[in-house]
Length: 326
Image (tube, rainbow, N blue to C red; front, side, top):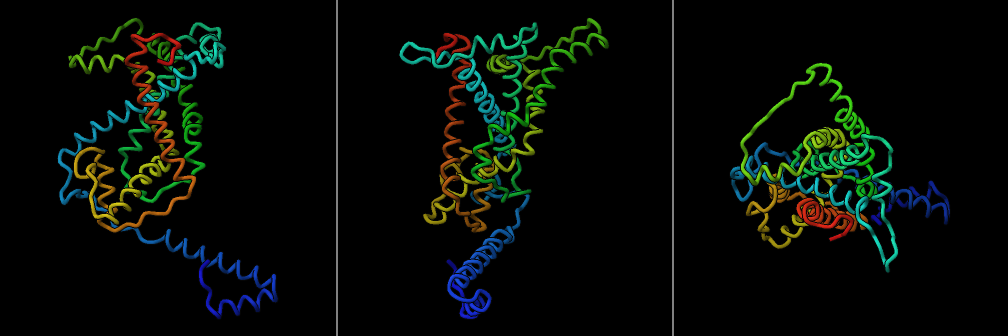
């Protein structure tokens, strides 16, 4: 509890009277002192952020190229997370001791008795893949300079998956309608039976990679991701800043710059943010116990899902046995 001066204590005694009333008055003033200290800490001026931030004393070489590479990696990871969740929830036959625990595939496949559902159910997965891919890119690569201190609490972090699903749902439904109904109807009544042929020469490895995606739903997903990002932005900033602050605090104590800052082992925006905080001696904020638990746990789960989603996409879809975990 903050120390109170003699005059403050005297004022409390005059206001609160004796014994219990005075103790309640003391608690009220102490809370007010703590509140003023917190406000002053929050409203402390943020050091100026230059347009170009130097890392290791110079600007990052080939920054745009690095950004594009990391953006592609982040987008792929985000899409693979949805692939993993879709497969684990709707396709895997979960059993224990020879008894079925969960097997949603028959119900999911026959959820709607319509001609368009077999295609639409996969479109749902593909659209959400595009949405989460966009959120991963925006969170990992977005310009943090406009709001360097934007943060959320543990509750917002824990409910982030629900926020993404619910906030993107209207765009997902509208997008699937456009793909399966609105788009074909408009094409038929405007362009009739004309067929659009596009031929682009691509390297074999790039063509093989792109062939694993259905571009129409993914494009709708990108639009959904841009819409949801307005709500998700402080969540992504919280996760990014959490890990950077930990390393900044450790570096301020040891004086050793980590290797992922000195070398291009992380996206340029993260290395620049670290360097700006370190150069301006920005003190890391103390995090609550829930944030310390929720952030690394959720990040670890996303990493595991992204790796498993890649396994589903690249192996199980072509060589594996449907319904099996591996």
